[in-house]
Image 1 (cartoon, helix red, strand yellow):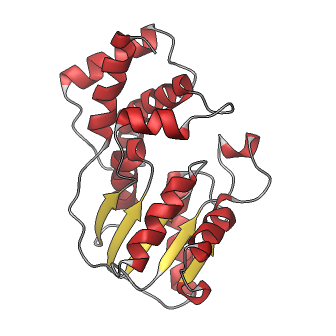
Image 2 (image 1 turned 60 degrees about the horizontal axis):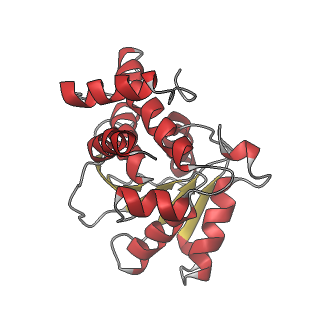
Image 3 (image 1 turned 120 degrees about the vertical axis):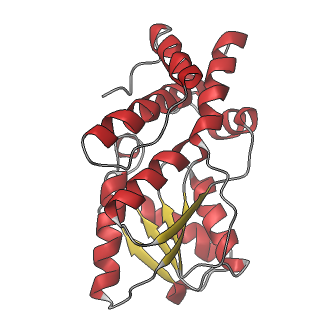
Length: 217
């Protein structure tokens, strides 16, 4: 990754992260994906006592349906159990295929169990924090939510978590696609609106011109 691309990508990286301060919650909701480090972050928060219930939400999405045959949530839950989370403190929602469904199906799961939590910690990939927050607030108004992710820098993330099936360029392209969705999905009513500073949008447009457009709508 050349210097200019890295500079533009890091600008998007910082915009996507919200840096919320953690506070005690009723539920830790982990939005699953290809990134098992997110499962570890959710398990760590549970073990540190931030909430008494841990939920993993995710079936097979756009990326993982090409990587795995087993739902994301089932794999994430195994990571948590291996780290010491009691299985009876875990709920699994393994049918959702996008962020909106993560929230909708989790809400139904909790309704079925006659649970009505009001305070959530949502755990997601670093570059999906903002969109997850915007989606949650639109799909589940009236609840308190903070969003967190694995605590790593952009360089640490792309060096550690990219692999043969998901390259560093793929990670950048996914961030570009997610930034587009910040605007488009708000216009379609899928998320609450989020301000996108001019310099962030200009970085997005330059990355699109450079060919990082494979995950655009």
